[in-house]
Image (cartoon, rainbow, N blue to C red; front, top):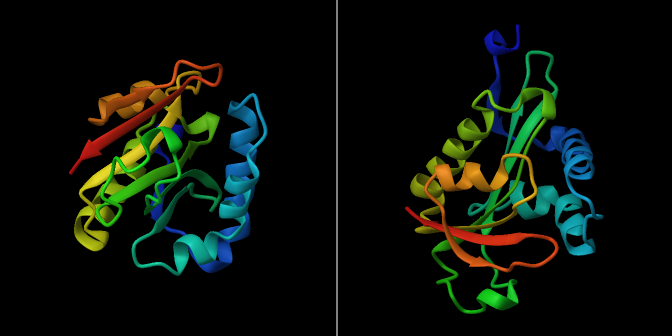
Length: 171
């Protein structure tokens, strides 16, 4: 039974990068009505350089008992890339939470919460971030309500076709 299955949540290892990339791309294509942007694709394909080899970044995955990736989340230093939020954040103390995806067969079992808790632990004890930034889309299954339930507040609701909502949380 799924609710009794043991789920392992930990930092992604170098040898798991291809499996994790495949998972993220698969889930992205399942939930988004548009293609992954080139900048996001490049960031994902450089996972080792962007996340695994950086002290202020983290890529965590949830694995089922068979060793399959069933969820992910990432943390990296926010880079002021969102034009509508330009210069809002202290870049030395702000991270971006992204790539929070859960396999559709494992949603609503607390895996997203466990992944987020690991990201927060990292932000507070290792990277020493004070502000968490993310953006989500209202059409994503569970995305917007999930982040609100975790304490994120809306910074900007763009009210555009892609339903982008920018959110932040202070630690």
